[in-house]
Image (cartoon, rainbow, N blue to C red; front, side, top):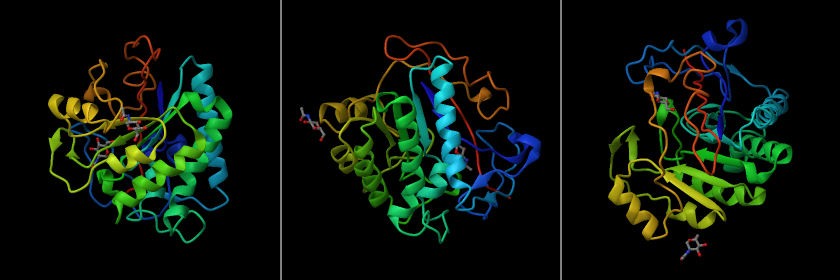
Length: 261
Ligand SMILES: *[C@@H]1O[C@H](CO)[C@@H](O)[C@H](O)[C@H]1NC(C)=O
Ligand SMILES: CC(=O)N[C@H]1CO[C@H](CO)[C@@H](O)[C@@H]1O
């Protein structure tokens, strides 16, 4: 499984060009990923309406390449402030075309990406990760519950392999908070395998599975290595993790950042 995401600060772009976004607003704070020195975010270029089909097509091509490269499937990264989430959330998306404004319009880009990838490689090879409640990288929404629910319901049209959602209990990596929200409505709405993460310890996780609030939580995965997050090296931290049998040949991690200034 490889995670499909896109766009970084300009230092990671061909010819140092600006990263793309739904908006031209940048992130004003400088960003450090867990103490690792990452380049400061650089101002984004707002995609025009005409640009969007080309970006959707880039995701399609990336999925095709992943399959040809030997991965079993792809996870579309629609979480944590990356490009897709910059469209989903009204705290970021300030567009006035058909990709901004209403919930339906803000979700259009994400669903076009899902549709293109499903048509290219088959729904049984596609998952998506979403984090409606998480405000990483200055990406907030005024109604995360409605956003999560709308996406869960809309995804049913594509019959993808799984929906992977980050719960509201995680405010920062490893820090658990109380929240009036849960992922239960999304879990019920999504007709497929539902994976939950964020803020669970072993006991909470086992309880959630026992109560049928999710399908998958705990698996023996590779230990991640923060030191190799956010590097421009195409292999280190991306495709060098151990294989996990029997379901997936390998877990690759793709990282990007986004708009800023
Ligand atoms: C668990 O929840 C799912 C989704 O709401 C539902 O389809 C399934 O029937 C439930 N399973 C059990 C054993 O209750
Ligand atoms: C400033 C900030 O919150 N940065 C975060 C952006 O999102 C990634 C997770 O994908 C975090 O690791 C960064 O810390």
